[in-house]
Image 1 (cartoon, helix red, strand yellow):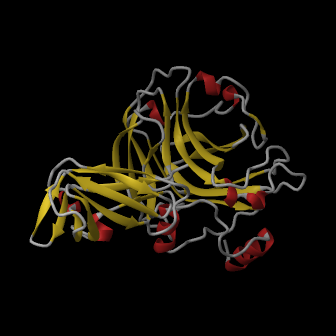
Image 2 (image 1 turned 180 degrees about the horizontal axis):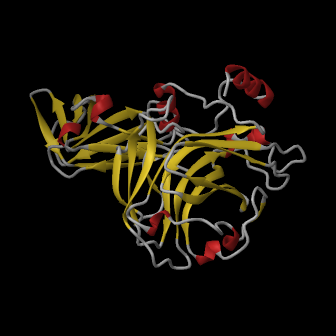
Image 3 (image 1 turned 45 degrees about the vertical axis):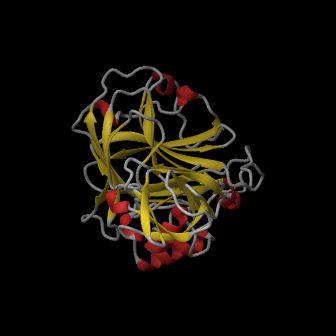
Length: 363
């Protein structure tokens, strides 16, 4: 696309030049949980790179999912890669497998969905892989869906799919899931035996969601790369909105945050207080307010994972848990140690040894 055409696309879209893309982490930059995940397919809704999870029901197929470095697509450094490691050629009726990202309702009000002024939206993304036809589907929180097919090849292609406005099904203005984007990659007869009608909003009929979809799980030779995912208001795809890594990370941390050695060092410490004679408490502020009150989990596999430093020495403990938690902070405690009540010190979380704190407010 020429520079003049790019400018015309931006003007013609009638949207702001920034914050056009409602997809978070569409360039697959952020991977707080890790960069490689093996055996994916046994559990539903497994998150890989931030904001993208693998949907699965009943399949015996397995894939390795990686945040893959990209050198052959100008402007992009990362992609989400799926590499099939266990095939599934005996497809049960209720099976499905795909990629999903979920969007908050309060980020979608500009669509005016469910009103007489409902607006079209345009999805664009880059993909390559084993030649297959898949489905890109929008699903709202009113059980209404709209899907379109796309066919990948072994070379990168930019796909642009415009979805008509939907005058039915208002998306609530809240922090719950208002719209899901699915990339359907495999389905059984419950999802493939009906009639596929492209780019038409309708109440969900499961059999009509994936007719004609190819199965990525048909062979261990199959793979798929995807990046540059953008969903924006209007009928024109504009150039991908590149955001800084820091901006994208902060958006992701609204939904998930963890203490990691790369960001916090090997042995980060926080001020702690001896709550009683065998317990110490520490408050961990989150880098950004989370979507809702999250849940926290801890890696407590070794007594050396957490350590309370105070006057005269330190003690290790392996039992940690949540005391109180809000959208802005976590107050955690450790017990099974002995010290003077009210004694101040520091809690060292020994990430390099395997300790971990994981906080989630995913949709």
